[in-house]
Structure formats: structure tokens, C-alpha cells
Image 1 (tube, one colour):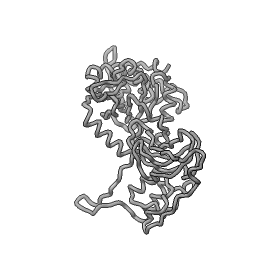
Image 2 (tube, rainbow, N blue to C red):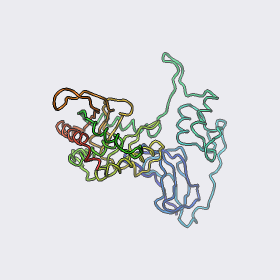
Image 3 (tube, rainbow, N blue to C red):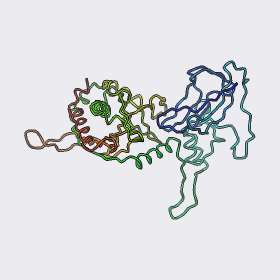
Image 4 (cartoon, helix red, strand yellow):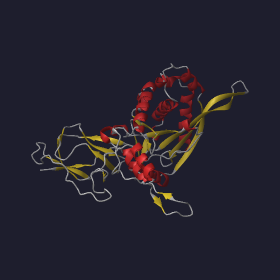
Length: 384
């Protein structure tokens, strides 16, 4: 008697996901911990591992198809293998455009690029491992054929239509939800980062081991959240606020086609060096779209830093159901009044806190930023 394999929930905000690749064929047996499917969620492309051993029966959602959380994606035969003998998928006669042919072996990035450029993956010879089609292969095919998705030319010229990926569509949905359902306000302050700049400059030459500006901000934010727990919370429909005991700080990471938010768990319990190691690992995995489901869960507060792009200040939208998000701008040399009179120039950074007005108020936001600024301007305690 067979059972069903359903689409798992792989991130807090995931509603549905796209199956990029099946790692097992019908009739294959597997053990707990073996990879079953490669899935593109709203935040990353991850491999879902079996939670128990068994045998794959029939595939209900093919590669490229999507399913909502809890929907069946395959049947599972009895673990003894008696219910389903190993079999290959039945061949479907290919139509002239290749729509019925076996799904091409291509990377997720290559598939997205093919959609953007209007190129069929069928007939493209892959140059990647095991003949897998890469983004470069798709771009080369597009250049050779001149293929594009276009609408008829009009007053605006020819139009290229781009379909949103699953990640981009979910980001769009959540940002509309944030902007239309959360009554937010913002507060900003300038932080003197001169001492942190001096500490980083005096650190050893192994640059990879030196905490970044953002690492200091994450550490300071975690310490501040411990003192202002109402910011480490969620608004719940019905007029309730859930305050959390763990402080898990999400860090926004820009990739080629999306914005991902992996999470530094228990950031208030970690040293600055541990936070630096975590953020480097998470940022690298995010850019490779190799984050694991546990890297994306249970965030309670978010830090978004655009300082590396030369942005002085900006306002970030809250990632629901969180209560606040901190937007971090770049450092600049600015005149500051000296204690003994006169003016001196310092490294100044603007931070902006966006807050859910249903949970916290203006004075709360000002006090939060005041404490954050104090920690960043006296950073020795953070570095211990």
C-alpha cells in the first residue's frame, strides 16, 4: 500500500515551491537523510532530504512543476520495495517544438535565463558537469538565434516580457503585504563609527578574519534587542503580540535575481567572531543559492545593509510578521563638534529603523536607536 510524499515547508514564508530536479527515479529506494528533490523556494534552492527510508512510487509533480505546502508530489511504495518494481518513466512522443520531450538537464539559473531570453532548452548542448546546461550555454544560444520574448512594437518600442521566478514572485507578494497591512514609521540617527574603523584597521592582515561593519551592527542589534524585547516580536491577528526568547537576526543578501534573508540564530549569545563566521558562510551560500532550510527559519529581526553600494541612507520595508527592520547606510566623512570646541571630522554612518506602529511607538524606536548607537560608538564590549 503506497503513501504520499507531500511538499515540505522549507522556509517561514514559503507558500509553494518549484521542483527543479528529482534526485530519485520511480522505484528507487532511499534512506533517511538522502536527497530526494532539489526545490526552488521563495528564498533559495535547497535539497530536501528524506525524513525516513522508503521507495519512490510514482512522481505526481514533474521537474519544473510547482506545488503548495502539503500537496502530494509523489507516491511512496512500501519500504520492502514489493509494491513498486523499479521502472523508468514512460517516454512521451516529442512534438515538433520539443514540449513533450524529456526535461532538459539544466541548472536553475539556466532555466531562469532561458525564460528571460525566450530560449528553448531543448536542443542546447550543455557544457556543465554531466552535460548540464549552464547560463552561459543559454546566453550563447540566444546570441546565435537572436531569440527574445517580445510584444509588438509600440510607442515604447519592442517589449521584452520577463516572468518572475518563484523567489521573485514571493518577494513581490510579501512586500505588497508589508506595505499595505503594516502601519509603519521610521526613525534615523547618525552613528560615529570612528572607533570601529580604528579597531578594524588595527586588526591582523588576514582580512577574511576581520569582522565587517555589518557584523558589528548585527552584534549591536542583538544586544539592543535583548534590552528592548518588544522589537523581537510579531504582531498576531486579533490584537496580540508574540515576544520571542531567542534573538535570531536575519541579514539581507542581494543575489543576481533576488533578495534572500538567511538567519544568524541566537545572535545575542554569540561572540563577534562567531557572528562574523556565520555571516560569511550564510552570505556565500545565499549567493550560490545553496542555503539549507534551517538557515532561513525563525528570524525575529532583520538588518539590511546597502552601504557597500555607496547608499547614504534608505528605508527598508518590514519583513512580516516581524516588528522592525534596520536599514544601514554607508560610512562617510562628516564634521562633528569636538568636546573642547571646534569641529573634527569623523566616520559617520546613518541607520534607519522601520517599526510596526501596532507594536511599538516613536519613543520606543528612538530609545532603541539611542542604545544601538551607544554600543557602536563604544565597540570594545562588542569585540569581547
